Image (cartoon, rainbow, N blue to C red; front, side, top):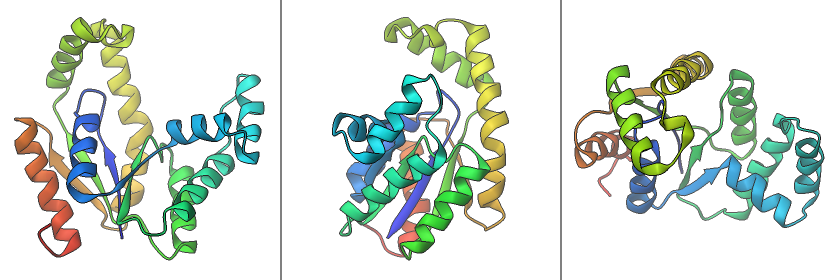
Length: 195
């Protein structure tokens, strides 16, 4: 089983590359946002618990999110692996995820970090803002704050996985196809075979 986390600042192409990885390698997309919405819509015990926090304007506690991830893993025992999206965002979450995966007799295989210079990220996001209608892509100041926020929050998570030799930095510049080739090389090295 290959479990990977795709890291990258806003504008690095995570969404595009996640879709490519899912299609080529048959990994299941595990988005904590999608899980929350699904559990709430299904009125599951975890969904009802999460809704209580959301209704109070609070963040859903890590234990509830980990519970939802556990449910998703259990519901897909035949999966070739998972690509984690939006989680973990903190070292505490990374440690909790590691413990959960260890209980399931698996682990994070690799953290692929898309590395893109800040000026390129700003250009991409401002270009996207022209067509996306997203207000957080329209202002250069807001875009730069998002990039700084990303680095401040996720650097410790990257460091956590680097300690275990699981962090791989991948150049996130060039064509979508070229970047995907670089990511594929890392994934296939993990799998030990060409897929």
